[in-house]
Each structure stands twice: as structure tokens, then as C-alpha cells.
Length: 458
Image (cartoon, rainbow, N blue to C red; front, top):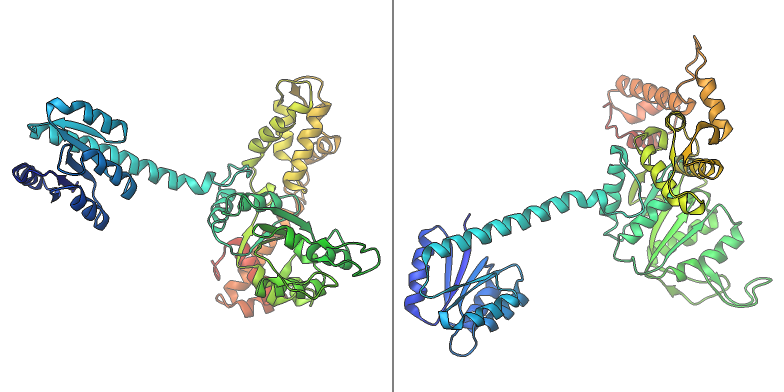
């Protein structure tokens, strides 16, 4: 390893002797006669190790050490001192020096010191590299997963969290879209600021506009005082627009203006209000279909869809089921008198076979239900909701013509994939032609290809 070394000593003979030797050992060596000269060198280039005399005219080695810790804390400092001033070197070590050596200098000791420093730096670099590799996987707090599919989701989310880009989170109901949105917020620089969520499908158009943008006193009947909307409350933070596909047309126009100009007026107001809000949107609707039907603005879609994150349904990431079961058991155990709880093998088998149309939210409800009803610490199949036990018994019946073991949604999805693949092969990857064969809008076809991670006819 080529190590960059700076030698600081007011004695020229000492500098030259040490410099000649260290250069012969394939190190890059620079010298300085005092602290001021050394500081200029340290500000102009990266130095791995500084060997500095303690006692010099003017500022001493301890002064230089303090300067180095400000300029580059990663630079290692070795104090060179006479035997009678070892206590000064010990003081320097307490302030961050790597080690000290006594004069006259033993060149073998120098070699060992450099080797120790290089080994330490290599370990630190390796540790940083490993942390960087694991950062994407473990950065997002609140997202419980152990599956490869969700690792990719977490990786994308952790990277986009560092920006202000709008994110569209897509997935079936109950997959954890709001959980992911919160994780993105709390992994961003805005984590100390508000996270505000609003369900666009829960309110009618007039109430939704007041909820989002606020209103002035007297703006409508019952508006007896001024109200701040969710955009104002989320200023400098993050706003999650859940069920964005249900946003009324008039509200879509106002939202588009906010995204473009970062300002709005309250309902009944005329004064523009500037806001700095990071927008996250979530939906389980087919937005492309809504655009074709004229129910969703295409320009708004592209504003919201800077980055898309597709959360797979739980049935497509069954590896997560045991992890989630443990998490929900730990979450709700404190609501019971039990000190611990676990599912029996038979009960666990039922949970692993179930298809979870309600996804993670349904699994959470099932675990909570079973935990509350169980009389013992071991949760049996009798404690599981009867609907699951019934589905399990039905799935055991043989059928020559129908596959009752695989959920219908999964079979439909597989059939769609086969049809799309056949159409793409026939048209040699031409999406316009394939969409025409399938009888669907080209936008819908693009959405499916993107969702499945396909490129043309792959």
C-alpha cells in the first residue's frame, strides 16, 4: 500500500533521514519544518500519517494535532519526542494521537507503526464498505421484511428518501403503502418535520378541498373561523395523498398547480401561500385506465410519478409471513396477560397456506384475533378465525378440472402474463401492435410490462 506521509520537524537532518528511509519503502513523503507549513500542506493534499516532533519553535506537536483533527480527522498522528518529555506525548494521545515514538528514532519501530496504521485504516474502510452494502436493506425503519422482492422495494425507497422527488406507491389494499411512505419520510432530511396523511377517497369534493388547502372564515356555510389545511400543516415536511386515484377532477387541477408553483390559496381566499412540501402518493387503482377514461389528468400523473414503487402482495412474498407473524405477536402480546406466545405447527401451517386477499393488514388482524382468543401461550388452529380453517379444509378436496390450491387472482395474473408474452412475441416486441392484439390500451400494456419487470418480449 502506498501511504502518504508528512514529516514535521525543525531539524533538517532528522527530516531528511526519515524522509529518505520512508521513501525507499515506497511511501509518498512530504516534509515541513514547522506547524504553519504543515497546516498549509494538510489543507492542500490528503495525508494518511503525520510524524511530528513535539518540541518545535513556536507552535508544538500538540498544536498541530489539534489543527489536524479539524482539517481531516482521518489523518493519523504519531508524536516524536525525546525520552524526557514522554508525558507530553501521552497528553497528545489522550487528544487523539495514534501513538508516540522516542528519539533517536528506531526505523524498525517506524515500519511497525505504519503497518499498524495501515491495517487499522483497512479495517475501517472495510467496515464502511460493509455498512454501505447493508444500508439500503436496513435503512428504512418500520418496514418488516425478509423477502427478496421486498428488499428491492426497500432499496429503491431508501435511495429516493434522500431526494425531494415525488413518489407514487402502488399496491393492493393492505400491502403497507402508508407504512412505506412513513419509512421514506423518517429516512429523509425532513424526518424532524411533520408527516401528514390524507385519504382522498374518504371525503367528498368540498370537504376534501377544505381539508387539503384549508379555508378562510366565511368561505362557506359553517366556516366560522379560518382553518389551515394539510398542505400548510405539512410545510417543510411530507404529505401522503392516499387513494390518489379517487381525487376529484377540480382538486386535481389545484394539486397540479401546487406541484408546479409550490403555492396555493385557501378555499375562499385570494392570498397565495408558499409551501415546501414533499409529495408522496399511494393507490391501488389502475391509474393508466383512469387516464384513458378521462378520470385522471395525465399531466398530474407524470408529476406524481417521478419514481414508482410497486409493493407486491403478500401472496407473492410468502417468505415475509413468518417474520410478520413474529412482529405482530410481539406487538400485541402486551395487550394480553401472556408473557410469550407462538403458533402451533398446525396453526402456523394454515397461516402459511392462506392467500391473504387483505394482505399484511389482514395477517395483522388474524394474529391479533388468534392471540386474544387463545387461552394458552401456544396458539392452536382452534384459535384461528373459522373462515381460515374452512378454506384450509376446502383446499384439501381433489378436483380433476379446477386448481383450487392456487388463488384465482394468481391464476388470472399468470394467464395475463402468458397472453402478453404471446402477443409480444407475435409482434416482435412492438408494444403498439401487442396492445392491439390484446384489445387493451397501450398504456395498460406498458404498466403491466413495468410491473412485471419485463423489457419488450423478455
